[in-house]
Length: 153
Image 1 (spheres, rainbow, N blue to C red):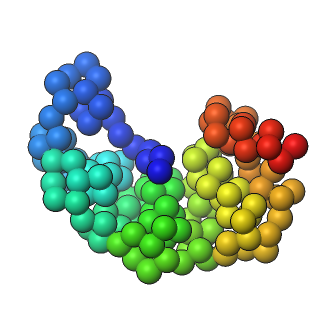
Image 2 (cartoon, rainbow, N blue to C red):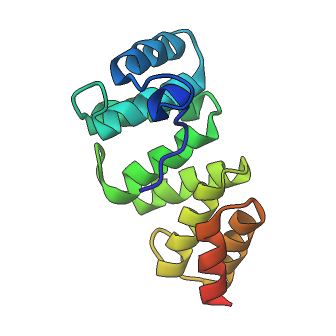
């Protein structure tokens, strides 16, 4: 699974990695209306970093982020629906969320949407549509999109 939205505090870039502090700051940001903070806090709950793993809580946070226009949150929420984590599996909802993310230029969202077209999950199976979406992800610099594009080429 490829989650978008992590920042320096989670990864330990330029600062000492501290999940507990990250949770504290992301909570404050999310509560303050920063959609990216909600996405990042959702990742913490999804992965169980600094908090007890809770997929239902992650879904709520990704939903909050996506509803506020944070396209990485839409991608992550789409993954939850696609995989049935914290919510009932729903490919149609995943397609909706990945489409929103891809339209917002989130390359992971484009690749994941391409995967659903390739498999015919939640949409009519179409390798040509999958290839188009993989190409969009590849053009955006996402290696998995490029690899999948080459496979369908």
